[in-house]
Amino acid sequence: MAKCIFCGSTSAPGSKEHVWAQWISRLFYPDPRPDQFITVRQTAAGVGIWEAPLIDVKINCVCKTCNSGWMSALEAAVAPLVTPMILGKPIGELSLADQLTIATWVFKTAIVLEHATPMTRTPFYRFELANAFYRSQTPPNAVHIWLAHYQGTRAAASVVHRRRLRAKEPKRVFESATTTLSVGQFVFQSLALKEVEAANPSLGASLVFDSQWQSLTIPIWPPSHQQVAWTPPKQLDDPLFRAFADREFGIASR
View (tube, rainbow, N blue to C red):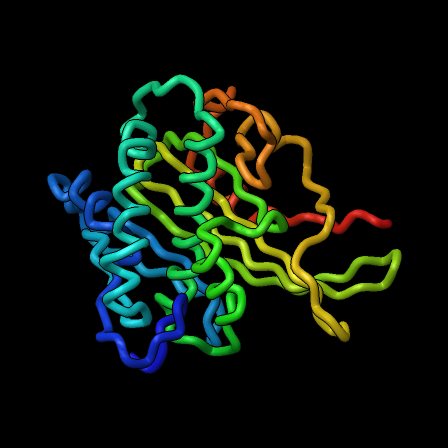
């Protein structure tokens, strides 16, 4: 391992980090269909789709200290919150502390997931951003995270998009990274947006989305400072999940 993507250590032993935590994999091992899990990634050749019977994907970009320390503690904290949602069981309301735990786990997963595919360009989540997250243990407020309820045919799926777009007024150029992941009946989407082609690139901007997603998603980050009820009023089926993962957005004018 050349450098831990979070702490930057080059001396600590490397560790094989599971992109999908083992506690998630154990929920589905009894039914290992060949196409049970799907991964969609942008590559140099276009959009790549991989199917597999198990979710045992590991990457060697995290040091053992991080993997067995704060990352392990985060998985232990989030598992009792997310497991009922994965299995479609009611959990009532998510407290502010619950939302922070889930949002922190989602953002960590988005960073790790980007490194699961061989890099064909500079990572969106560069070391400076990942290291700041490591030190704060909190997602940046400029990151947006939603939860959704899935009722489709796949046990798990992940879709990652990177896009470049322009705001008309004033003229600004942004790059976005959207990570959408489903496990059982639980879905999360993380969206990070940063300004490029500027003297001092900044993270974040005001976003505009189609209103159809309001009844299908629960925003948990940036923090709303209020409890939220699980589940959303409506669910995602297979076509809606893919439309959600591929959805586009606009930049609000200032």
